[in-house]
Image (tube, rainbow, N blue to C red):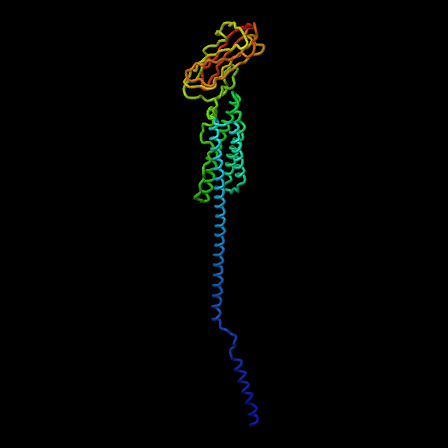
Length: 387
């Protein structure tokens, strides 16, 4: 019995050991309550990451937008500053031009021409600078108007340069045409001023205001400061010249549309015509003796209320039959004061038809503003003998 008892004891011990081993909790097992904090922490971390990402995106958006706005504002400011510089230089060119024209009588035509050539180069440079500007989209309209204004100024200076020497150096109708051309170009300068003031400046201001850009100056650019320069008579006076009466309508009357010298009545009246010692009479035959060096003497009076300038007196000799050559003679009176009587000597430089019935027509051309012209002219039947 003791033998079996000794054999069974280890067996029981072993059984208890195995039983205890099976019921011992596993070391790696965790309870369900311990997993919840880890899931919440992960969710919080994810939410924080989303918020931070959104904030970064918003920050990047506003940064990019701010940079774009800053670039736009700077482009508008740069354009305005560039236009201001060009406009100021162009305005100074205009001031120089009209100062030089007003001082024309003090120098030579060639000196004035050379000055204008220099101004032409400056005007071309201003236009080229404007053409090469970097133009923001909001300034396209302003740019187009600016180029038109500068082109008018460039072209006007080119034309004035071409006409200034004949305006100063020629006489009579040739000078008139040159002076009138200069006055016409001054109209173009005035148009450029209107375009700059009415289009360029408002378009620039509108673009700056829409972009909320403040503190910007938009300087004026008036090329011609005195509107009187569009008048041919004013141009002539400033150049130290006087306009003649210009072309005729077939009756010896001017067809040019020039401005009166002042308010009130204007007009001249033919007083008498003589040849040698004979005073011609209208409506009857006048027998005259031609000798070399003979001349007509025409007397007329300024019957208006103003001084008149460059009054053309003409004499025409034609056959009464209407055929053959007409002899045309003329002389221009520089000035006739109000109420003054003027005597004009006009040489007969060509021998007239001898022994032939002729008509001698004398005309004192009308002055600007004159309405009554029937007393400006007379026709005298005549017959020349050889002296």
